[in-house]
Every structure is written in structure tokens, then in C-alpha cells.
Amino acid sequence: MDSEEDMLDAHDMESGEDDFYSGGTDDYNDSDDGEPDYGFVEEDADDSAMIASHRSQKSYCVLREEDIRRHQMDDIERVSVVLSITEVEASILLRHFHWSVGKVHDEWFADEERVRKTVGILESSVVPPSDDSELACGICFDSYPPEKIASVSCGHPFCTTCWTGYITTTINDGPGCLMLRCPDPSCLAAVGHDMVDKLASEEDKEKYNRYFLRSYIEDNRKMKWCPAPGCDYAIDFAAGSGNYDVSCLCSFNFCWNCTEEGHRPVDCSTVSKWILKNSAESENMNWILANSKPCPRCKRPIEKNQGCMHMTCTPPCKYEFCWLCLGAWMDHGERTGGFYACNRYEVAKQEGQVRLRYDETERRREMAKNSLERYTHYYERWASNQTSRQKAMADLQQAQTQNLEKLSDKQCTPESQLKFILEAWLQIIECRRVLKWTYAYGYYLPDHEHAKRQFFEYLQGEAESGLERLHQCVEKDLAQFLNAEGPSKDFNDFRTKLAGLTSVTKNYFENLVKALENGLTDVDSHAACSSKSTSSKSTGCSNKTRAKGKGSSRTGGSSRNPDDN
Image 1 (cartoon, rainbow, N blue to C red):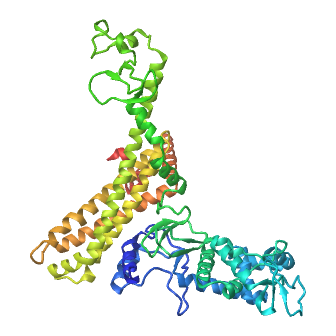
Image 2 (image 1 turned 180 degrees about the vertical axis):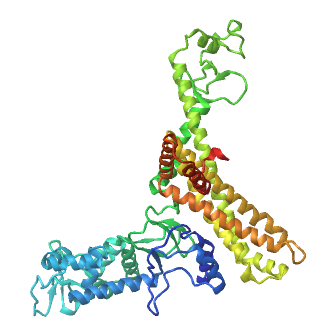
Image 3 (image 1 turned 135 degrees about the horizontal axis):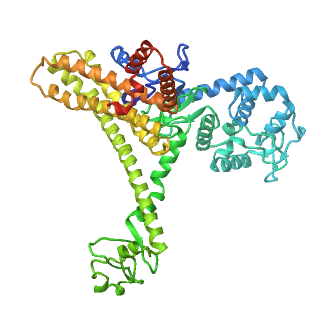
């Protein structure tokens, strides 16, 4: 099992993905002494200066198991003190109201009697206490001394043996044991964890406590488990943030809203459709339609895998037909142009006698082929950026563990002055993630919105071009300094170049992210300004005004028309 230090190091690799482009939200971390740091990890002084630019105040905090238990007990104690009830009763109330302290208080003070009846917290015993020396168990009907009998708030007597069997059975049935009620069929009194602690085996108590802990996250509307396989961290999210990207301590980055991989600036609906399309059978069917034809007799799809047009369907059909016109092969002789050069279809088209099935089949095949080609275009680029991002993450880890120390020795430069290399890798990792999802965005961008598509492809192209220059610089140019025999006089120039490319690339992606999050509305405003400018010119505006407008257009880099390049 990895140590906590290893996990924190792994998270440092991903820390740049938290939120490059948002303005920040309220700090959600506890600041009391002794409280855990829900921000992510504590960095060295050198690291914190470099990574600070990649982190804004977060709208969430990461909870370890001990943090979850502490928060859970704090809520139980708070409800217990305010409502003057036991902690067992407070935990029953909180589970019923999904661990919402505010909801518990509102419902309790609105109608305490109704809440008690609904939840199963009784003020008085249903069964009056007995002074008999022996009591009959309500399950096995045997008589036992009072010390062998147990009951909850209702007072229904059951022997400890039957209680243990009842509790064990419900615990083995799953998390429903947290809502356990009195064994008496007519009674709704709740069974708290005090009864479980008293009568259950150690194994059953451990299961119950695990269900109890997990319910605090799974029933809580503002908390979720990290969806990464094997991760036991939970995320406490502050409502009201526009950014749903979350980075866990395990280094997994995901969207709080849909729990898919982090996909800002693309919305969850687009991501859901894209993932479904990548895994759906529809693309298989599109491929079949684009690359095969149905047998004219049995209608099974057939792929042409050789050069001649003579097709033979597989058994038991064995129908022989022409690939071009789908007609019977026996009709194809010299009078039709020869066995391997059928021209019946071309002749029929010229004479206007093509049967409807030819037109319909060809139309469907052409549509499927175009659709498949379009999907393949976007998917290949989506997948390529994902692969590049994973490689960049591995390169960043190598830089942290090996290359910085090696470069420091060869260039006689302190490692603290080489953080610009890690900053470049962090920027590349984040930009690859953003760029990957812009291809999913582009796939679903309506074709009829030509201006938006043109603006989108311009911004995407500028961002991608800048990213490729940055990636090549840190990947290729850095290698010559790592392999150098000694200090190089060109290293300072390399530092300036890489830092500049990192800053420029970040600006490109800031523009791209903002444009997509705004729904490419800048296109409409730009068109309106252009229309207004044209109108002003037509009414004879002054030369000074026109010159001023031209100056503005030159400074508006993000509004530049792609055709101007």
C-alpha cells in the first residue's frame, strides 16, 4: 500500500489541473488549530510559489476517513445538545433527514410529535414495565430473567439471543440495517447503534460502523466519494460554485456534477452524449452501413474484401450477385460489359431507370459514410490529446524525480530556479485536458451556426498551435541541456523562451475557455459591432472616428477574423 507521502507526491503532479481559469471562490478550508488541511497538500516554500499560480481558492475540500468521522460526530453532538436528546436519537434523526442538521432543526421545531412518530423515537414505552421475575421473549416465546431481556424505547421484550440473530441478519442484508426497527411487526420504534454495540459480534459491529460512516457521505447531498477505483477520500462541495472540477488527493480529477472525468469548459450534457456515442453500437452500425452492402436475398451485410465484383453470400444463402448493381450474377454476361466490369448501374442512371432501392441504399450508405468520417475526425483528435496528456503526466513525474536534479548538476543551477520547467508541464497537462474536450464540443456544435463554428475553430486552432510549440520546447529543446557535458550559455535563453511560451499558451486557453463557457456569444456581439460600424460608415462618419475604429480592431486579438491570417 502506498504511503501518504507517495499519494501526496502523486497529487502534486495533478495539482495544476484544479482550476486554471476561474476567478476563485470562498476558501472552504477549516482554519482552526488542529483541524486537517482540506486544501490539498503542504508544499515546500519553493514549490508553493510555482504552483500558486495554478491554484485558486477552492469550493470544496477533501476529507479523509478521520475527517469524516469527526464531522459526523460533530453533527450528532450539535443536534443532541440543541434538541436535548441522546446522541443515539440524534444519529437516528440525522440519518432519516440525510444528515442535514438544518433540516432536522426545522422539522423538529415545526412538529416534534410527528417527527418522533415518523422516525421511531418514542417518548414513552408502549409496553408498561413489569416486575415479574421472568419475561417471555416476543420471538422464541421462552421465558428469561430480566437481565437476559433487551428492548428499545418501545419496551417490547426480546431475549438477547433473538436480538443478536435479528441484528446479524439485517446487517448481512446491507446498509438497510441503519434503519432497523423493533422486531415486533406492529412497532415502528427505531433501533440505534447502542443496541448493535451491545449485542452484535465484532465482525457485525465493524460492518455496521462501515455502513454508518458511508451513509454520512452517500446520504449527504453536498458530499460524494471520489469515483477513482480504490480511493477512500470524500469531497465536501460548497454549493453555488460555477466550476465543478474537483481534484482528489489520489490525483484523480473529476466533475462534481456528473462524476465523470474533469471536462471544463464543456458542459455535462455534452460529455454524457459523447461518452455514450463512444461506447454505443450506433457507430458499429454506421461502419457497417458505410462499408458493406446487404445481400439482395437474405439481407445480411457483406463486406467486399477482394477486387472483383462477383460476390457470393455465406452459407446457407450462397447467393451470387454483382457488388455494383446488386443484381443476380447469372444475368451478367458479355452483353452487360463482362463479368468483371458491370456497367448496368451506370447505364441505368443515364437512362433514368434506376430503381428506388438503388437510390435509397446509396443515399443511406453515403450519409453513414459522411457521419462516420466526421465522427472519426473528432474522436481521433480527442483520443490523441488524451494520450498526449497521459504521456505529459509521466514526463512531469520523471522531471520531478530525476530530470531537475540532473539538470541542476549539469547547468550549475539550484533546483529552486528550475521550477519553470514543472510549471510548463503542469500547463501542458491542463491544456491537453481542455483541448481534448473541445473536440467533443466541436462535434456537437450545430453546422448551421457558421459564424460560431468559424470563431470556435479559430480559437481552438490558435490554442492548439500555441500548445504544440510549448510541448515541443519542453520535450525536445530541454533534451539538449540534459545531455550536455557541462553548463550551456544558451540555457538562460531557453528559460526565457519556455517561460514566455507557457504564459502565451495560458492566455490562448484562457480565451478559449471563456469563449466556450459564454456559449461563443462574442460572435454575436462582434457581428453587432461590425454592423454598427458599417452603418456609421454609410452615414458619413468622420475620418477620425473611422481611424479610431481601425485601431480598436487591431488590438482586439480575440476578435480577429480567421480569414485575416
